Image 1 (cartoon, one colour):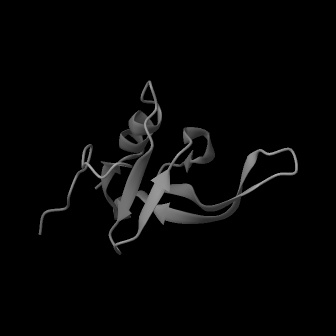
Image 2 (cartoon, rainbow, N blue to C red; image 1 turned 90 degrees about the horizontal axis):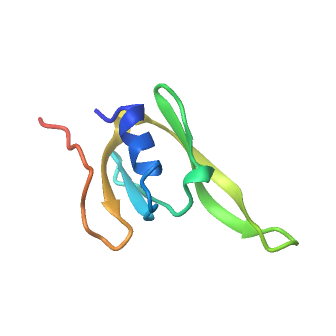
Length: 89
């Protein structure tokens, strides 16, 4: 089971490196900017679709709320797995 601290540590990496969150249903969500993720005690809000504001800033247009217990692993945006914690049957 992923904990809020696991996700927060990944978001606070310096320098920040984009990564993917893998959910138990097979969904993968890429996190490109740590400030766009909201981490709660048992859930997280992850942006899934973006657009540019008239001033050229990136803003979230759609998002997904996911239970932390459904996060099965992290992987680097370049495809390498790291920081993951797989559930054991």
